[in-house]
Image (cartoon, rainbow, N blue to C red; front, side, top):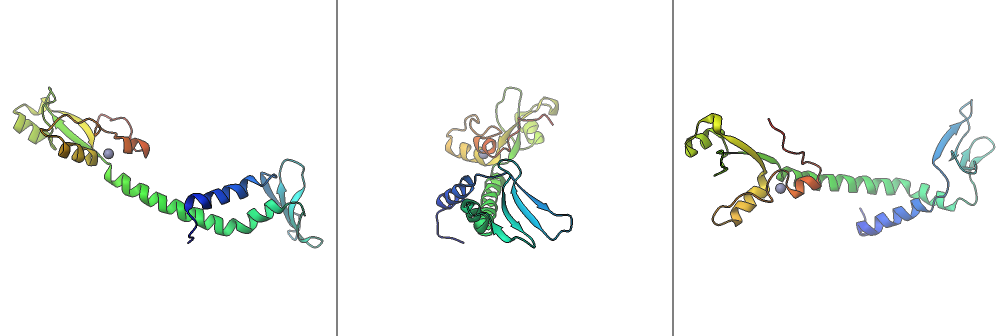
Length: 175
Ligand SMILES: [Zn+2]
């Protein structure tokens, strides 16, 4: 949409917003609906903008900052919504990688299996003794690929740092 770097564009929008001294704004209509105005619902009570029979789009002269915010609102909002969608998409892609995965182990924590049945069979213990814990599937895969020989899970325990940062990581619930 724009070649302006996101941080610069956001700073421009922030400056426009910060320059507005009135507000919060509210809109008002007269009883006949043929006149409306908006302005600060608190503060000096002066309307920023009014339309009607007597005031055909009068922007009070000293409200240049308000005018700049209003004039840029459509493009600023479109830009910001685009950024939200872009960032949500990135967040979703990262979140799709860092998902909780249940692993099964024996009472001593020796080994990690993807199913309780495999744990029972390969650790040679009754199903009732199989225990479980949760890891991040992605971080676990990375961690294990770097560990020779296979070590305990460390940073891959659920929730991993990425899952926590994304607000995905509830403490492991017992299900
Ligand atoms: Zn992770």
